[in-house]
Length: 162
Image 1 (cartoon, rainbow, N blue to C red):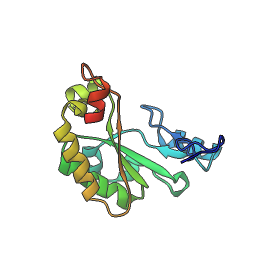
Image 2 (image 1 turned 90 degrees about the horizontal axis):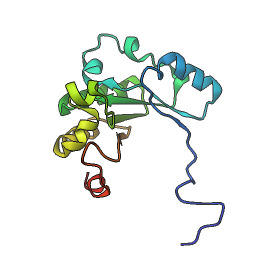
Image 3 (image 1 turned 135 degrees about the vertical axis):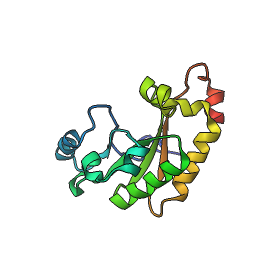
Image 4 (image 1 turned 120 degrees about the vertical axis):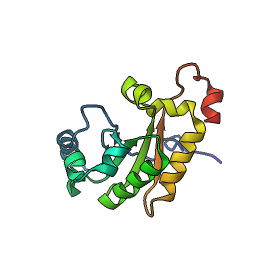
């Protein structure tokens, strides 16, 4: 297959994503980004699966308005049933996609809470969580944000096996 010099398969999809940023990707920042461009895909800050599942009022935690679309919600967690339930709630709430964060290396998530980048060391748990999430939605994709590696598991071989 030949490609013209102006068309490359990796760059033919031109979506601009405003990635999730801790203490930045709040509703006010996302609203500003939406004012600047209607075309960008916005991402929420990572929210814990338990926060979504146990919230009395998701608006209080997420602040999703129709003006923010298209927007992806990123969650963190390691319990398959909690993540699956959070994903279903987020689909019902109106997100276009739910993303599982398997990339956050902070001590708060990977250390004490044992999710984020820690899941790269626990492939079976990661697969179980993503499978449960994917099985519990009807019309939206589930994706994973990961790192190239974590701690001593930072080879290309590990990433490919993961």
